Image 1 (tube, protein in one colour):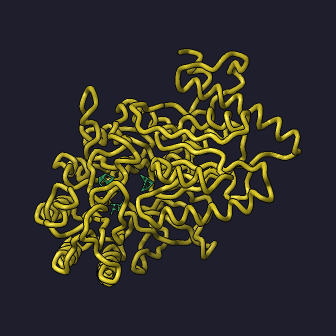
Image 2 (cartoon, helix red, strand yellow):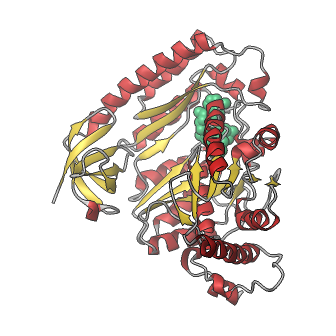
Image 3 (cartoon, protein in one colour):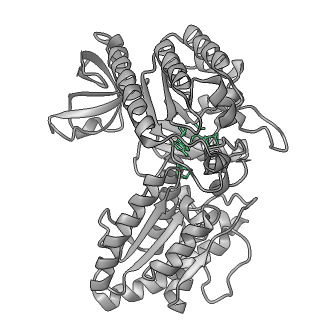
Length: 491
Ligand code: SAH
Ligand code: SF4
Ligand code: F3S
């Protein structure tokens, strides 16, 4: 145990020199992975000596914040092994972390793989790997196996912690490695992670999903809901805070059901209370919130909190009670409207955002009008709108009453116009006030400006330089531009 502590240090800055690579691999995790990291590192070093240059790895992420967080873990492992990180897919090791939530996510991957194939022809020793949600689908793995022979390594969502071990197999056996697990009970803590931003970080609080919304593939590819122990989460956030992180984003497919199945159950609201007590953390966000499990306790905690951001993403999916039932969402239009109204009453400065699917099987014009009605009543600060995409294996995909694109697309366009117009009106509401922005980067269009995120998740651009990055700055909002502000720093 002591050795483990010593060889780990803060944030997985592990000392691989202390790993005995002459011994057989340990059976326990995460020790086993540290062992393979050390072995991989030897191989990487040897290759570097042979080529006279460093080896570079590129991780390309598709999909949601869970995947982005997984990619940070994958990069952390690759870095510990000795790879240099690069954004260029012209690298020695290219890993695609895939998404399969809608068909276009799959198409994008196969498009990219075509280009990767040409690159690999010129550079045969390059390694190409696929992981993530799409690889949990047997038919996609079969397709890769048959039609993409240049892919060297395939793994899924349940065994990303095994990257070092799988890579070792690839490097030593010189064969293709495919290792996809159907499910897991395991949560492997304490692997290195490479954070993308020094000042903010996602933190997994749970994995998987038990909701089985009838259109959604996520429960099939991410497995059953598993909550992390609160102490593990709080420890991680404390370490992040000590390392300069100011904003923690708690991640789960349905954070509102966090902790229900732990040996000692705890509510999500209670977890938030404990996160709030951590010094150094100035802002707390979370994603995603299922309306069916959103408690009064959570609304209270948000209302009374100094740190929880004034933003709630509350996916609607449809405004029609009939469609919501078919979607297996377990709330109806009235319950959703009541909940939104209660939140807006209790926390008047809250910014509500949502996800909406257009063209779910059987959706009629009347059903769609119900969705438009909710949009007009709630007046979202922004909304992600999606055309329904049938996912093989989900109940909705098997329905015979699929809505043809020529019906769904015009509805989608109408919804988008409505959502954008309301969002533009909403965006203006804080004009002239002073708000705190967490500065994220130099403005990509004008280097004399910086870009910061407001508590309500909107962006503001204002004069400043790189020294402000990662700092919370009071800014007067001087112009509203539909979905962002221009501002002036207040001294
Ligand atoms: N767990 C999150 C959602 C994850 S998927 C939640 O419940 O909020 C993100 C969004 O993708 C969903 O909210 C939904 O709007 C959309 N989505 C999921 N499956 C889809 C499908 N088959 N077709 C179109 N959109 C879909
Ligand atoms: Fe998918 Fe529903 Fe789970 Fe969200 S809550 S991931 S939409 S099944
Ligand atoms: Fe996509 Fe998987 Fe997230 S399917 S949306 S990356 S959980």
